[in-house]
Length: 262
Image 1 (spheres, rainbow, N blue to C red):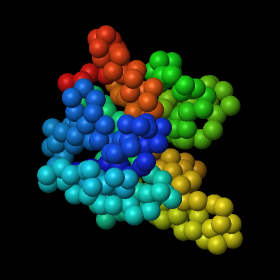
Image 2: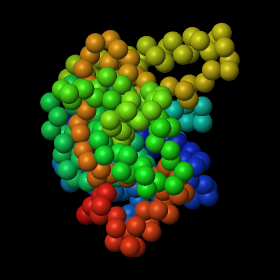
Image 3: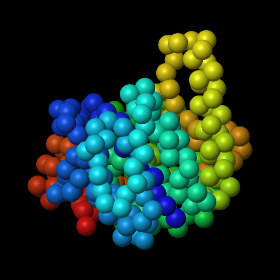
């Protein structure tokens, strides 16, 4: 099993903290976000780790860790960054956003998943969202809906009311065996279609292409994607308000309601 961490983005919503470094290199609880992720994977025996860099890529340097730069990070988004590392998508690959941290139990659950494509979904996400300043739940861009069997019917699609979402994709997933082939096939098709569209409509941008859109297309084709369900146990660092909130909760010893910082 190997891991790919996507760390190419600008992190503009965390400015000025990201003026001189990518947000994956922000420090929280005496560790950088990226350093914490790498250590977490290594503790679970995952040592083949690839980081897709972009913005301020020179600030990311970890011994023994492979880095691949998305040269077009300004114009593209998570999907294109992942495709930069497509040669590292094997028959068992963990894929993680770089602006999240999570408990050991969360990683263990996704590692143990037997499905060919699985994502971690927080079913208690509204409890977490309620604490975040300026983050309106109905505007969340990666909410999910899973059925009684634990498989997704919707991921990352706009919702009109909160009943349309019973979980939230945290940015951690696994593809394995035929799932790796299926994902690459759908991702390649989606990128190709968008690039062809650019010839007709120059206002379109590749930054509209998201991993969740590929996952939704896979679902629409009849393939199953498992929702590995958790009850909090993670944090996302998206805005200055997030960073301030988590530091405040840490100082007040109330952060353990949502995550353990072991």
